[in-house]
Length: 500
Image (cartoon, rainbow, N blue to C red; front, side):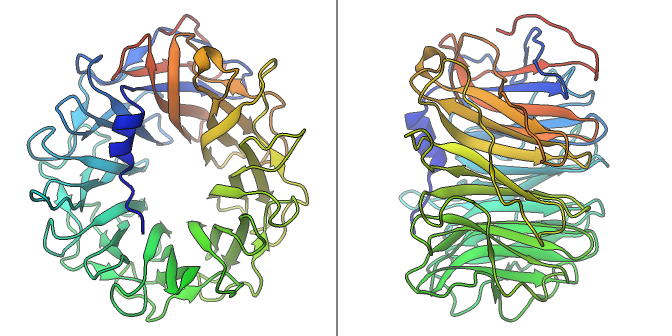
């Protein structure tokens, strides 16, 4: 299995970057502009800030976390707003303990709720020894909307520190204090899937983490775990597994807040040709027992997007999985899929697609949806990215999707291609306000300065008041390591100006 040293590569390839954030409200067609607010509070312009993550709560709280190299090697930093992004803290905060910049902290994930809890998990190399670069999983949390954090972060993998790779963590939580973190772990040889959990808002964790994949320890690669939970004790973990030589999609679940799990994981893909690869699963669930899983699958040739679901808390699944992309099966690559769901039976799936249109197979974003808990899907999928007038050859990279319960689906991406200003990326968004039925005919550009170059890695969050928040990394006027914020004020009120 390839070890993803994504951040290390980013340091070499991306170079000196900055992170920017924009907030605006729907359903305005344009994005008003005002003076930027810089969120990283170092001097800037010398070291990169990379890979933002974002989370928002219904009461106007917005949190942005990123990698920051102001101290040497990358640390985890956060800034937050309590008023829908109008104002931010004068001082950002480092969340990883220990000496600043002494080791790599990366692959951070964030979760938050409307009660003030914020949870951050990441992969950390602090326990590596000379010539033995390995990582552990660390966690920090706040329960007062980001004002204070645990003095010491917590290591979640319970084997000896700094021995093998524990990597690629993912997190899920609820409003009742339950927090679940999964990761892949090589302590047994090849990677297995492990979980640890907390029932007291992240303050304490289990003394022994739990292995979830089946078969002999470390015998085959089990990788790319994802986790979802409700507030009633149901936790679902999905991953791809090479236990049968080629990759299949497996799921394990708990009904008692993580204490016990199935003795045998469930295979979800319904095609058993040993030359088939089913990989990169995504998962979502609701409080009434619906569990939804998507993945990319090459059973037809090039990869397609497939879907499976359960309506009884994961006990039983459909006898046939469902293909969601609507071009000819296997005719073009469909990959990098994402899923979002609500408690009303609405399921939204987006992916990158390379199908030929007008003699071009440029990278595009496609979308399909169900309004009946996955029983039926649209006969025609939709292309979400619409090329700006006069622009040719654009490719839609690194998209992210978020939704709210009001029927809004928002998708953000980086456009990259020969006709983009300054020969580098721009950030665009499209959205639906009617549960996926219609999207805007024209995409909206989010980065507003003609001085922005190399904008990348956009992320997005939308709250229940229909405020949308977008963050990305880039550099402006050759300057690096600055985190900017731009806002569109309260719904129906705008202020304008030039960001810079």
